[in-house]
Length: 259
Ligand SMILES: [Zn+2]
Image 1: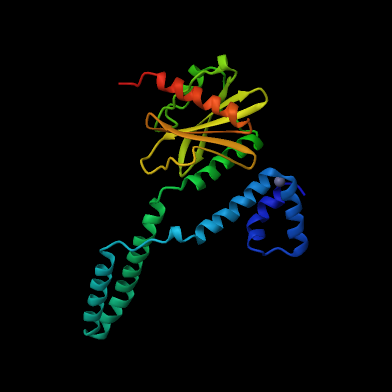
Image 2: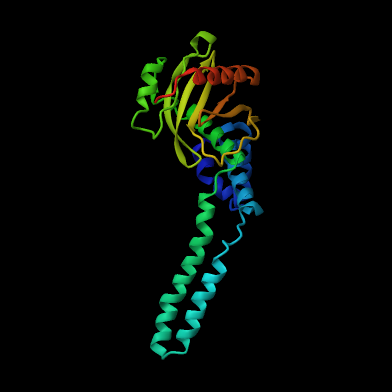
């Protein structure tokens, strides 16, 4: 089984829509293929997260009043002649429903991603960059080539540091999309291992727990510094990835801030 079919069928598989033979074939493939099993695991986790009570929101304080006001207006119009009542039903009620739906969905969309879901996205970003022959958009070991490449492509300018003297040569840079925004991906190497360093401006809602974690055989380190969020991820061992993160932290802090 190539990866095309599992990728097309993963949602159907998670919905138990496939027949037994196909399901078993998929499971066999997931045992042998890390990217596909990661994709399936992510789908499963997303389902669990969507069923989680954490996504339940209390209605904003004024909502009850506003619905009462709309329904009172509705009741008043019911006392009027039939044509008015019809208008109230066709225009008033859908508007009230739309308002309720909008008020309940907007906070959901604005809600910052949890660190756990974000870490899953970081893993996907890393796996994607390894499998799709798309590790770098700007392949270069020169920070003076990589840093200006991001100009105009992002609404911030990532600090790019040279760590070749510590055995972490820069490989290049790439645009990526994580946590509902465009981010810079800086790629470094350690012998045969690649490190993705994802960088974007930190928002205040972002949590700081679980700075170090590992999932799917990959190690992750997360920190915030100088109003930026950093995620380093690699199949490199935790000690060397920690060394890498410490170096990035020291060198980026040593860069004078513009202005
Ligand atoms: Zn596969």
